[in-house]
Image (cartoon, rainbow, N blue to C red; front, top):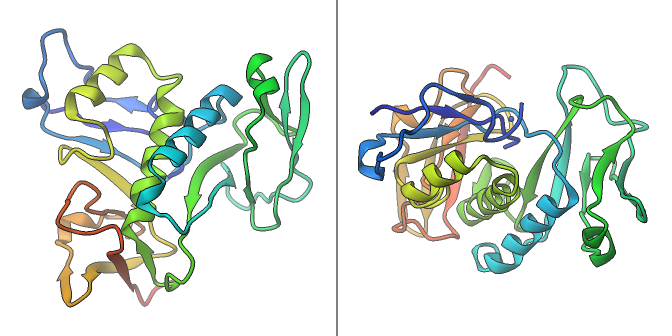
Amino acid sequence: MKLTLVMSMLLAAGAVTAQETEAPKEGDTAKEVETVQVNALRDPDFKTYRAFVGGLDAFEEKHKLAPAAALRFLLRPSTPNAGIEGVTIRIAGNETSLAVPLAADGTFVMPRKQAALDDDAEIILNRKKGSFRWRPDVRTPGVPANARRLGDLRLECEVRWAVERKEMSFAKRTMFSALGGPCTSKRVHVMQLAPRAIAGYRMVAGERSETAPAAALREDKVTYVAPLSDASWPDDALVEFEFSETK
């Protein structure tokens, strides 16, 4: 069975609830599912506070993937030419009202507050629902501007998966679990978003350097597949971009 799932992640419309060509049927096994494609071009819509805390938990549990990095989230407009000026984020419930500071670059830190969990709080923006998206943003200091650290990408995937699975349908959770999880299975192709158009990329770890196959780069030239599940590449390996001449 050929299954292709496009999740609107940030890392593009709602995460795992985006679009599915064929849902898994009862009795399907991981061997019968050839590939699942996770699209990181667009970002997921906002989730409950409880779901975000699931992401905080995953970051702490998997922090060894990027031990020098902190967890931030990136707010992105879902329509072109829109900005974040004047946008506010608030954790709100019956007994909770907590402002979440938003930096000028669109990043924010989601605080951990037990009272907000007990209150089943929501994440509220002062904008129309669906007008902004989010994605995890994990950056180890010192990584060059033309590269991403593989462990950072792996940890971003773990955080997003933890947030998404809290509100994912049972069928989709079961599918990803059968595959071994979206961040560690070779059958799951997690699409990443480059800073701008790229002609390709190479993986670099110490003296080892390999050019990524052409199939790792998608037609739009800004989305690509990094080898998240390939244990032969250490977390400190770099995805070094070859930027296209057309910006």
